[in-house]
Image (tube, rainbow, N blue to C red; front, top):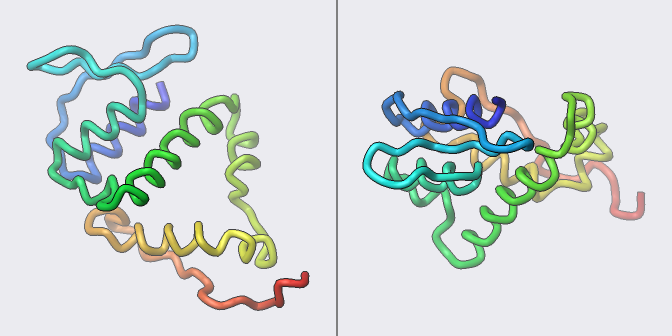
Length: 142
């Protein structure tokens, strides 16, 4: 189950101890977290939010109402749009992984967000930082 692997990576990046047990439910393989001291949690967004709160890193979920809504929007996009694609090529096309410089300029706010996120402690781990272009190369008329 791909979602379980993603949740385990999230646990690792948050510095949580390993040991959570995940399973999948239904035809769409919705992730389920088996908790030790309460009911099971179902759904990628629900479990991810729980793990962030468990790690005492609520700032990753946003501090203002607008920031919280934007985080929820990205998580919902991940679940509703990305999970529906059956293979890596379709997912890359959806996420527009291989963009030209001109195409990247259309998504400056997304680039700024990723640039900001990569500087949170523990996110990059051992990887070097990604350089993002901060100014436009072309006028907006292109």
